[in-house]
Length: 239
Ligand code: C5P
View 1: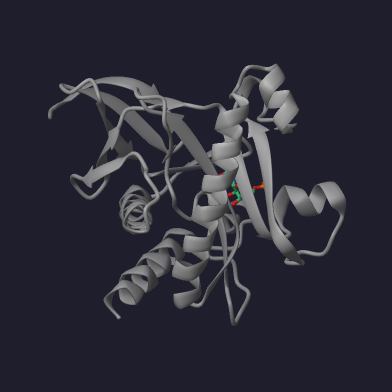
View 2: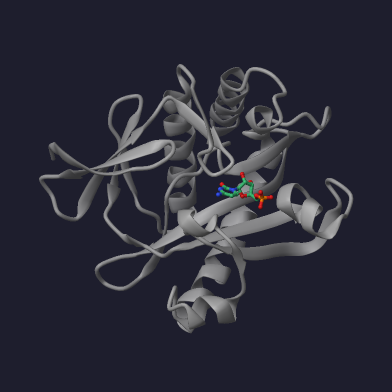
């Protein structure tokens, strides 16, 4: 397949059409944003490390039977993915309290949940991605009831597999965000990316953040920490 016109420029990725209408070309940019794009910074090597982490995690999940849009990694910063219609729901899975949960409910940071908490946010930049529940999503026509049931099931399965992967790396999986898409056959599959941009990861011993919170909170250099995550991931795959 060959890369064709730019279809969509996101905050950290560009999506291009290809000569195959079923396939998109994703380019991971050297850019990081916070506050829904209001803060934007160029960061060398960030695209490369996120592309590598995301490719590895999608591959691992496929091995575990979780269907996703990833086809193959091309260069260091590019992937081919299956074209899907993105469902405008940001599905957040939380194992420990952090971020907006701590802010909303005033509970302790890293308080453990008895069972994973699944939350939905309406993926809508103009509205600043508001919190919404299943009934809201139905009322807005964002997804069908069956799709929401499937998304919840898949989100829990992804969580189980990611916890296993990160535990081997001595990393605590605090929370993460997933996006799902519809295939032309109407199946719900995992899409978007899986990287420290959309997960909260904490070192099990030091409790240091190993994710985008470094940028959000100005805790230091972010890319070297992402590279550390990639190294631990590659190392744990070898053993
Ligand atoms: O900010 P909040 O606590 O709701 O974020 C929960 C998880 O979802 C975090 O891992 C965060 O990185 C991710 N997230 C995301 N994109 C957003 C909002 C949150 O990847 N627009």
